[in-house]
Length: 216
Image 1 (cartoon, rainbow, N blue to C red):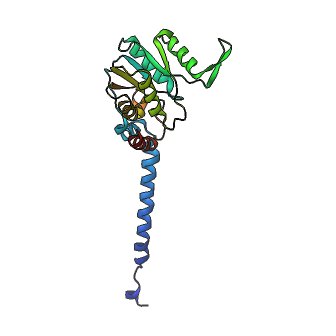
Image 2 (image 1 turned 120 degrees about the vertical axis):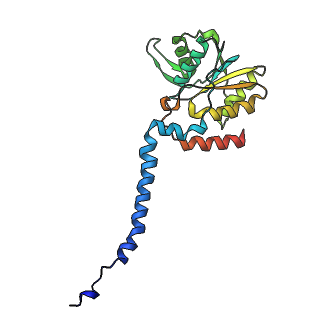
Image 3 (image 1 turned 180 degrees about the horizontal axis):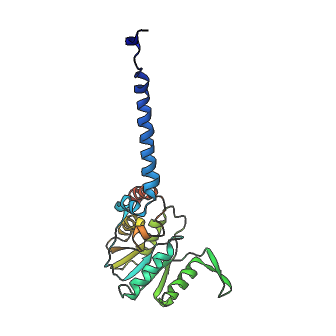
């Protein structure tokens, strides 16, 4: 047997290398999008361009952006501003949808009633809370809230907008364009890594920001 003619066939190995590289890249992408993005610190970094926060915010009133599960941290932050005497009044959206059952009062409550009750529990008296009416057929919630505030309070010199960290830049955009000369100060209810919305999809917020920049 002529051993000189027996050589390893490296061509098949070379042909398989691109597939190995592709599998490795897929694995890296999976780690980046699934494993790393599950870490609050990483999500905070990725969402950093979405965030605006004025820790010294103060004004003639604070408006709390409406929401579902993140609403309560925003209300809590607004109550802190009230007790720190940075704002004399808190403005809420008059949401009349049924929220949940109040076993103490033995009746169902609307969302705004529950919000007012929560602020009362935090020490904010009802007379320091004002309401704006939601606009009809509003396609863009944040923008419609900003316009409703501007319509009811056209003479505000300064307003503090309280919302979740990932929504702050979008809220700033909406209120600045809706209120005109009013000084808009943005206050994040909590750092993003501690927010109730830490697990919400970040890419949606970037798309919303682009859309609002066009329509606002």
